Amino acid sequence: MASAGNPSKPPLHSIAATLRRGRQAAGLSLTELAHRAGIAKSTLSQLEAGQGNPSLETLWALCTALDLPFSRLLDPPRPRIQVIRADQGQAVTSAWADYRATLLSACPPGARRDLYRVDAEPGTPRTSAPHTPGTVEHVLLTAGRALVGPADDPVELNPGDYVTYPADQPHVFEAREPATRALLASEYS
Amino acid sequence: MASAGNPSKPPLHSIAATLRRGRQAAGLSLTELAHRAGIAKSTLSQLEAGQGNPSLETLWALCTALDLPFSRLLDPPRPRIQVIRADQGQAVTSAWADYRATLLSACPPGARRDLYRVDAEPGTPRTSAPHTPGTVEHVLLTAGRALVGPADDPVELNPGDYVTYPADQPHVFEAREPATRALLASEYS
DNA sequence: GGGTAGTGTTCGTCAAGGCGAACAAATGAC
DNA sequence: GTCATTTGTTCGCCTTGACGAACACTACCC
Image 1 (cartoon, rainbow over the protein chains, first blue to last red):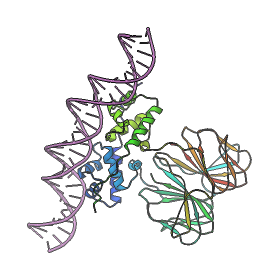
Image 2 (image 1 turned 120 degrees about the horizontal axis):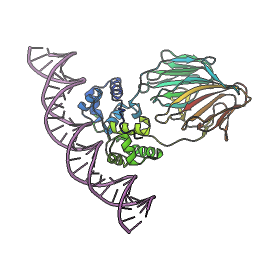
Image 3 (image 1 turned 180 degrees about the horizontal axis):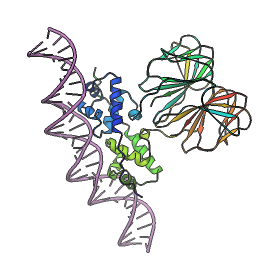
Image 4 (image 1 turned 90 degrees about the horizontal axis):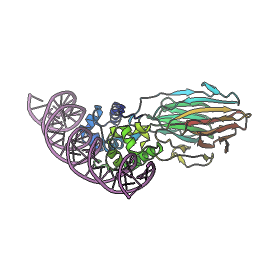
């Protein structure tokens, strides 16, 4: 069968765009980033122009300098904040058993989602500094009550409620009742 | 200033191991894979030996030939069934607020996780046919009680308990109390 | 105006990666 | 046993990526 010629080209332009966005988000000049990464700025310039065929060392140096996970090199754009209340969302029901599954969020290609269980008590709200660019958080409240979301526009959640929001900006988790619990998925890639 | 010298090296040996495992899993000889990927077998040989500094084109060609997502190049092995009870797991606590986050599962590179909310009632258990190979499910029980996991070895869960198990084999979700709820993450790629 | 300190670009040089042939080592057919 | 065939390795040649200087350009200060 021999699929000898493989015409698939590496997504150079995606990588170029990712690098440029990453660099600008970090507030670095091309010269500065090249210096930190230990590569020539000419190399970086060509890369951001979507030209060439960079070596692993070059890509890796840029990733570490930008504090980007390597797998983040080829990625898409952004999402926004969204709430699905406990009684909302389109559910998939089972024909045989009394079972309802509601799709809260399909995972975007290439993304990674770490899963956390959160236990919080009323008092000082927990405010998080912005994570790396592109990070999105998902919260499903399982018990209690909480104010969750972007620091400047949080959402009140009751048990069963779900919210997703960009986490590359300041965000907050404030328990409103004792023994508040949630599942938190941090999506970052 | 000037973090000029960046001593961090690309994980060449991880990539080498991944490539070798991928190739052997596909049942390909070094010659055959090199031919399919359109690269010289000498190049591939050196790569699997953990030497050199491959170019993006080379790595990309190998990924497409092996049908591996690019981000999967530097990855560890596989998971199995695991339970983290409500009071278990190592938590990250906040210095200021009464907030505890427990990492349940870090997402493997290249994987995708769809998030579902499940509502189930006692009665006939819901049994699922095996999903595509490599699929893993994560369940965090939020209310009620349930028997969850591989059909031949399910686990009893109480609120706050977490379980993960391979879903490319028959598995079950059986509510043991009315108004049983859970978050289900389906990890499949 | 000139001078300076930034920006990101283009160019010539050099080292290094990729290629293909030649190689050794293991296996199977006869 | 010999002859094939396939395995993965090593080697010389050539292409090419990375480097660094020189470049054009802008902004700001004096």
